Length: 494
Image (cartoon, rainbow, N blue to C red; front, side, top):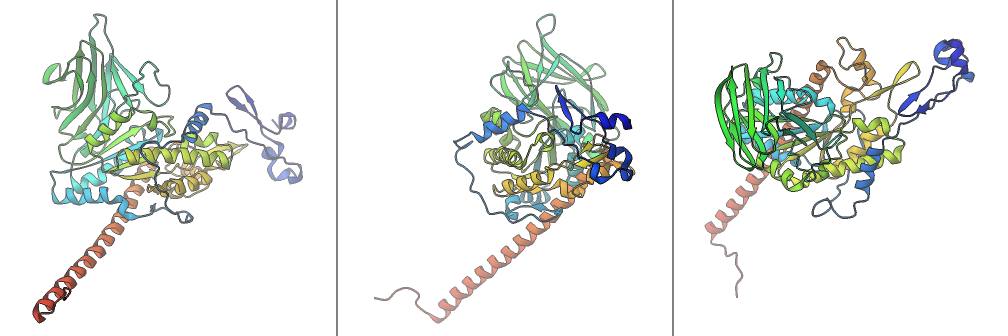
């Protein structure tokens, strides 16, 4: 190994999609090797032509993505290791906090959160802690929307024995046969495929899991978002006996479906023509709900590509009070320099801004990428441009009126991913990218605490404003009473 270290090139080199390198003498000998003899390896940043094309596409847009560009707000300098939710005005979160206040006063009302993200969210991670904390305080059951054929099933419900179903996504490898770009608000749909007799038939079996939160798996109803060229029949079965039936008319519909309390049940879909299932939500008719939408491999650059009319209608139909976006990690290994970071941050912020103007009735929170580490010789180190990315994202998003939560700082900043991997028990897995269930739970709990701090700040501000409004009203009433009592004339006299 030592002999090869003298013969191998000092820099890593590319062979097709692979990056090849070898240890240097300094890495093998450590302190025995003179520092004057060491030459740091230059790590080659791999190309990502798809990401560059998405950035270029956003950069070259000269007209506004919707009606008008967002007014850019001034942004303060970042605070080192700021674990709080940062935003230019706490009142930007009024839709969410007013919704909670409404739900507290009327338990039969609803509050709904939509959490977009990449593979860090798979299996309902992070979202599940947020959901359970608020369901404990405000009521509600179920885990919300999920694809009928999810890549990773939620922690509360297993999806088994799927047949006749095909998964189609707007992210990753998109099927170019679907030109209308209608993917629903989950960014994916499940296509029911024809069987040998030409009928479009699909089925899936559900089984409640014991390790998910009890409130999430104790849902009382379901609703499904479906589009078909002809009517479709949806049946819920328990032990091969029909429990309920729902007929979806031709067109695009979201209808409720009766589901049992049993731990196991199944669904069968039948139609004469092709049908798309945009998602199914397991929930209660009231309380707090949070939808986890994990997009493996996505960089958050796909929202402007989706069918705007359908996307907007879906967001409005579900009446989301808070929309969370958690992207950026998948781009980190491909960022070349600070200029590249700036272009990506601006492009990603414009996607978030597009969503904000598409559904202005919600509060918006962007969660920055976590720390990530790569191997450089024998040691793991944080990606050098990650800190710059969080700084640029923060400024771009806050200037657009979108709150920012710096997960990189929450973890502990540079080098924290290595510490999370080495923790006992481990908080991150050895790809130095993804969290373990315990790590994801820690992040989810931290998010809940950060939202509670923000809510306290909001309530304190509203209380002050109400006192001031009451003071002004009392002053006006007293002034009017004094004028009436003395007979003073307040109008003009000719």
